Length: 479
Image (cartoon, rainbow, N blue to C red; front, side, top):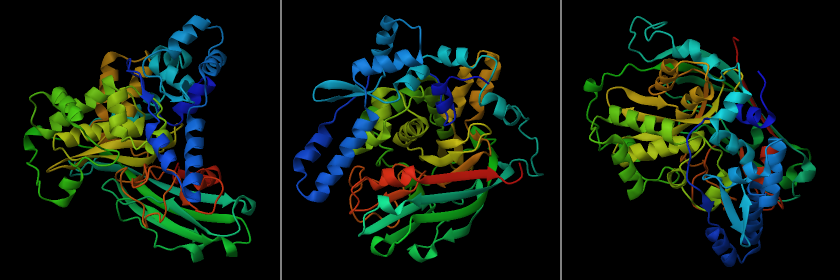
């Protein structure tokens, strides 16, 4: 399979196609207001880290952006490149009054124009080829005698997290805290086990795989650290394929008084809903009152109207903008953002929903990934993955019936190639960071796909430092 460098790099982390979207200018006013209030050395250091992140995510002036596009698409006239840059949906900010464009403009141009992807991967069907044996299998195939049981055909994985930060990159004094991700037990993910941890002496909490988020916390006293800061964690888990056979007429009324219903129908953090989002949800579902069928209409709306597009998550978080509102305003989003928008639309109608995930392990296309789940009384939590569904639009080498079947499969069904770290994006870390991190204060972490770090004595951003020196691997043990 031949892919250009920019398409290949994004396919490896899961994309989608779509339609034209609205322009998206992010206002930096919240960051500027924070800067005006930053008085202490710690606040000024944090301000420096935040501005660095914004500048890293929005590095290009218009001239530089045109040069980058010209290099990615040699032979395209400048007039065409300028038209692309002016298209709706190209995210930008204004720094000192001048537009600065998102670092992923090349990839996002590719997503705005599915014909570019189709031409580039001619003769291949990414995701479709890897998943067609699962998607097109008869609903009752490989089921136990109680075929209505939705969890089948598990795949067992073994994984490893390795962190190694050179001692010279760390300050001599202070405390370096690390939250490392772990697999958790869910209805479709079983038997998560922590096989080994090193070093144990700096663990402050028991490794948790039985809650809403899988995590373990380390605290290193830097005065005692003579060598590199090294952490190695090995783990295993099994993940099941999900195939729900829902009869809409058998869906039961919700128990609206229980804790889980209230938790996953509230407007909160990154899964926030506004009156405008509620109005959009009602417009999408129309007169449909059955929660299963209403969620299906929302899913199809996301797949067909919210194109995949890489999101400047760091800047969005710094500005305190909920991801669901970002998608509603801009009309585009990546896998996590699409899932949070789906969840927000559902929640606004009283349908419990959440954005779930960590990683995917789809053959050839392993990488970070989030999808969504919604709850149906009498059946449980049902998965939806609008992002994988959209990949059916990448190829013109399948029939329209095959395309519809592939898209429909990922409503209420899911492949077993998953590694779940958290049940929802808005689950806070434990213990909570004792000081403000580079992200917006008072808000939960967005995701725990990579280790999170806090160090008040570091001169460089500890989040960036730990990310640069972390390796996470996970492989099926029986492949």
